[in-house]
Image 1 (spheres, rainbow, N blue to C red):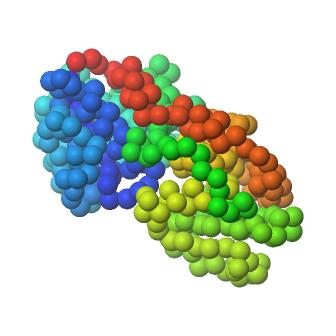
Image 2: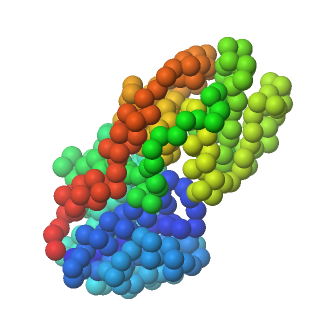
Length: 358
């Protein structure tokens, strides 16, 4: 089988969508053996580093194009590579109309699927999107919540949609649980942009005074960058929390691993996570997680691996953080939960839901 992966981006950012699409790329290459091929077209990437390609592909990678945000280059590359493809995998609904158009050119011998991540499909669709969704052979949804929301807005056949949860990157080392170097340190990781204010970082800041009244040594470390930083800094100053909050900015993978190893608790009280890949990464380090009863998060966090709160409920968030910081958690049980979302399980599940066989 010859597969074409269309992606908004693969290596130009460390966002959740880019990270999971790298795993799709890796899995599709492995599943194409021994005589199939995989091609990739990425819209945002200005170029591909050969080291990145070698890491997530194998000898089955036949062609690739990094389009540097050029729509014309993206469509041209997709048209050229789809001529030899049996299957197009769309990494985002923004690429779905392109696959639909390629199907119109090639006919039903060309199949296409969509990876539905979260909020991008929790909404009404325009006429072109609806037509493209109804024409898809499969829609792979990262959570049951995302599947329900998509079906609520599009009358695509129920059997077209399947739940294919995200997975941990196989290059994320899951070592033996490490004892926290700070017993009362809370870590959060997020984009800090105005458009992502639903992530609830401000709620964590608002909850910190109540947490510190009970646990004076409690601290919050915030990983991320974006245009919402001035507002968040102002909230910290208003609440006189400067000694207790650290803004770390962007950190690389190794630095993030150190932060996860050092913290006592990971928290991201977000309202609109389709899945919440960062929770798995924290669990892989044996760390309990605080999330919300929103989106796909309850499908990831179990009572053994963390606690859930209602979005926007600051007193409940504070009380849960206090309880989680004081509780003795079974780090191995938390890691076992993360291992349920391993890359091999993801690849094997993907093999069963591809709409055509080699």
